[in-house]
Length: 226
Image (cartoon, rainbow, N blue to C red; front, side):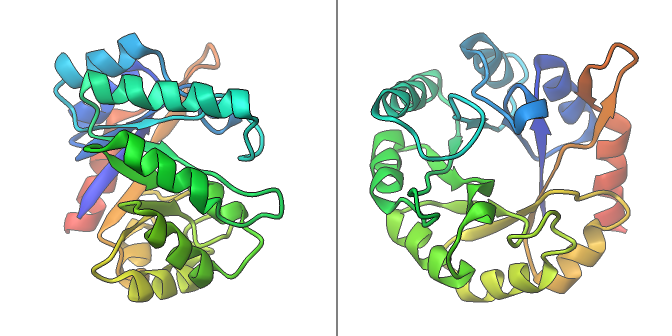
């Protein structure tokens, strides 16, 4: 079982490592759902912490229909991640009618190689059948989908997650995320068959800063290995 921790800073990444995480999804601004992190932070996680690092590439908050200028920025950020040696980028593109934007997704997969590409929770905002959307993401060449089963949390989306895992078998990894905690991780795994889970394991510090808590990471890992 791979445990991916959403880390929004160098300190969060360090805490994820201390807690025993298999890898991190590095980002910033969790308060808006995550944005592309600073290049220095990517470099630090890769070459100082030696963490398996998947980098969220999202140039702005809001929807996942990007202007040509925003898309150019995103492509440039993907290239920078590749040059730094990131293991994967995490992206998501939708069309104005709420379908998977296969053209842009395929372009990013080609641009990112040899990095892996995860299609992120933009998947949970689709306005099409999830199993149909799954096939479109697979056809675009992605390696993984981070999803809550099109529900507010992975626990609520268990039935759809299970269906996605069955249909995706041997072709793409389904990474269950959103609301994954030490209390429900085992239930989600057992009911869906996922082999990878994604959690923030976060705490809010007195100054309002959101940070990964290494103790919660340890609890999450322990909960699925008992």
